[in-house]
Length: 154
Image (cartoon, rainbow, N blue to C red; front, side):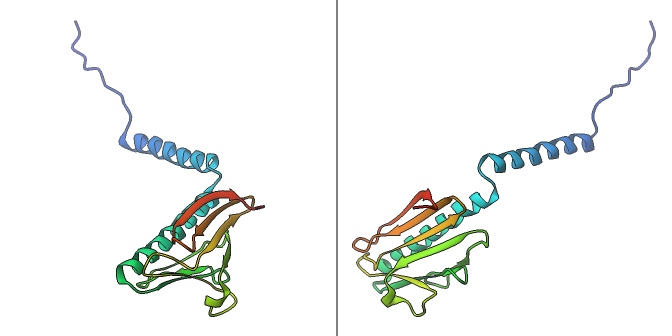
């Protein structure tokens, strides 16, 4: 019987980390390709953000008992909500606003006002990417904010 010590071979930590990194990168790229790409993620995310900020504006109007304004500027690709909340819209997306012209301070901005009872002036914000679109509708009577998926040709 020989008393040789068998050398155990395995993978180094660097090799394992390299394989895990390659799997992660492949997974991210596959997910992006299956979901329509990063622009589609931006489309959905931007639409959900605008809907959330409109809901926040409504809740703030009810809580304070004073009318609150949500301002959207499609040309500047920006929005503003109460309490200094603001954001931008990615360059890859188009934005359309439909609402009451009487509230607009300038022709290139859209305004939706929410009142203390929860009602609003109403309006629609459409966020578009090539053939896809999401729209955010604000009901004038109830102030309800609804987000729905559609296509750009509607």
